[in-house]
Image (cartoon, rainbow, N blue to C red; front, side):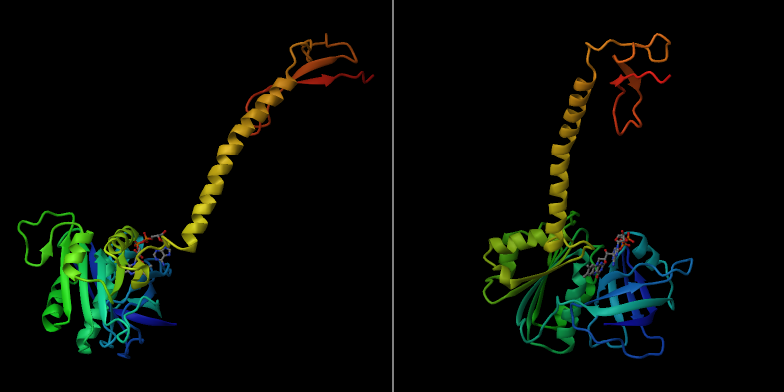
Length: 328
Ligand SMILES: Cc1cc2nc3c(=O)[nH]c(=O)nc-3n(C[C@H](O)[C@H](O)[C@H](O)COP(=O)(O)OP(=O)(O)OC[C@H]3O[C@@H](n4cnc5c(N)ncnc54)[C@H](O)[C@@H]3O)c2cc1C
């Protein structure tokens, strides 16, 4: 892993909430080597000249286009909207390459990509690479988006399919009613039936899933329901917090322990408080005003009203019995 100072060569804003960012070296030096499917971490200087946090983006270009890297980015929060406002020539700090969610041409001879939204980025890198290298690997893409306009790289994917006879694509739109059955575009959810019909048998195939965590979950279930083994599936979730694995287990355990503590400790606290006031306030004890000169006789127990130090510590005032002694 290395750190590079690249600059924005081109920034393309799409109609909806995505941009394509092209980065390269200012001196024209080729960009770093990477494998299709790897990602980079990038940051830039904000309006005050401070470096932002580093954010993660899969490299969408092919390693064969070595003059630049391209990133396909969905705009969401402060980082990405800030990025979209930068102009050509702005310096971008790039770290990478990272990641093992990679296309291996010797191993993945029959590969099915399932992309949810911007999860297309690692796959288009592989599709571009396989086409540029004239590889014979069979690459099938099922690409689902909310709307047609939000789908990144649609036209280029159609071009790649024309150019490379080993590529097959199925586009799917979930949240928009298409005016007619647009050729090759499906207007329903990617369910097991759609997947099975499009890919045929599952034997000997590898399945790569990429997108938001809920897409990953749904596609994994779909694949398993048509007989795909877990060992045939690889996935990358576009989330800053891993949805599965050790982190989720640890987080869930912490939540469970915290919840159990709340359930047991809160009633316990109130029972304890109730018990305290039951033992402390004794109706047989004669009450006398300590401030008055007619205090209880020496040696007798008389109650005195004590204010709670804070509402959080003791919820109400309690009457405590005190033994009075003569001081003079
Ligand atoms: C392996 C991988 C590859 C990805 N590839 C792509 C891609 O190709 N295209 C794409 O659009 N998205 C991709 N993502 C998701 C992308 O990183 C986030 O959606 C994006 O950075 C969030 O930016 P924002 O402006 O919405 O976040 P903000 O609103 O600025 O921040 C979101 C929150 O995440 C916190 N955060 C901390 N560290 C990071 C970090 N390193 N990255 C993001 N948030 C961080 C921020 O502090 C903040 O609390 C990928 C994610 C992963 C894990």
